[in-house]
Amino acid sequence: ASLAPAHPAAAPPRPPRACARACARACTCVRVRASALGRCGFGMPPSARKAFVDTLRRVASDNGLEFLALSKDWIIQISDSQTGRLCSIFGYTFDVNPAAAVEICREKAATSLVLDRHKVANINHSVFLNPAHEMTAEYLPRSGCWAEIQKLVGELGFPVVLKPLKGTGGLDVIKATCWREVEAAVQHIFSHEYGLAVSPYKRIVDEYRCFCLDGKVELIYRKIRSTVVGDGSRSVSALLAGLLADPAADGKALSALAKAAAALSPEELTRVPAVGESVPVQWKHNLGQGATASFDVRPELREQLVALAPRAASAIGMRFCSVDVVEVEQEGLLVMEVNSGVMMDSLIAQLGDEGAALATRLYGAAVLKALGRTT
Image 1 (tube, rainbow, N blue to C red):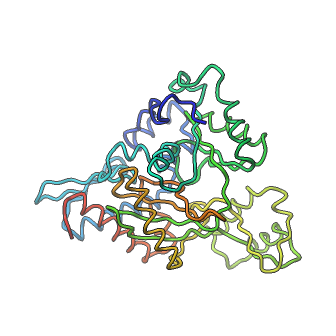
Image 2 (cartoon, rainbow, N blue to C red; image 1 turned 45 degrees about the vertical axis):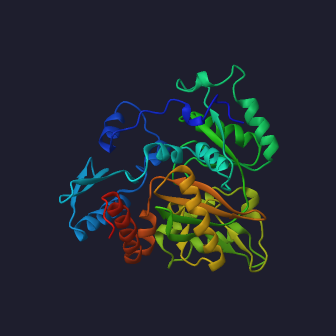
Image 3 (cartoon, rainbow, N blue to C red; image 1 turned 135 degrees about the horizontal axis):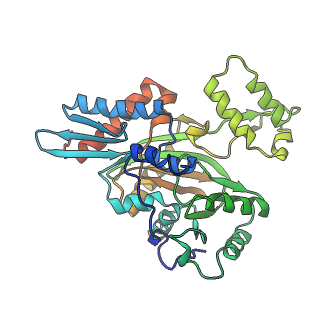
């Protein structure tokens, strides 16, 4: 369903913002939307970014390296004075990766095309370019793209998922259950993006994040969505009300739960789950939107993930990245996306010292690889 004449990434890219400071200056002239900020990682709270920077500072100190932070800590450079080698980190992207591979990862439809070509099982994403965007309008036929979107959605069936071609953290990822919601999602995304991707909605059992470095999976965790457990008499909304009224509950967890509940449909809220039935409150698995991390991964599944994730990274040409893999009912494991920006902020926030130690080990290995050190 691609309407571009060639690879979707062939459309002229947006000019990259040099740094957070440049973004701040631009805000005085134009409105910078949350989805655009999230794409770069600017949407993360300052405390989360601080944890990332402190981890890299610790890596430099522990290994006798020089540390430099620029542009409100958005650009990090770690150097080895003995060899003169340098490792640069822009946002959450490390320079061990080829630039073109990073661009492929940033665009979901491009990632899907490459993985398909290399026979890596993945969730298919079809690209549709914005006919009103000055950089992409000429790539569309005079008939536009709405008929093609309708055709694809008709083939996939409801629900479907629409999302910006580029983005992180689940921002502007929309599940549409009818034509009205599809049209609303298209209009919303096209109001500030040059294109969108449409993918089938999958019944996901679990989602896993696999951190890969040079063909090896260094860390795996499972993303667990917030749930309520049925008692056979109360509706989902009543069960949620009980959780939200718990005075002993964590404030951040309650905030995430309330946000997830607000996205549920009236039908979902009024449904009465059976006794013991676990009902996910969220359909997204993002840690930043209330999901939690667990290292409890079944041994046989871990073996499959250790084989699949590096294949996805290798197909694109990534050395250091995270690969999101979903277990889908009746389909098995599928790659959902490959992330060029390696973010562990939410993991650090949830696990405290344990999360900080894991991040230090992983980021340290990547930095030392970039500097040519073997230990």
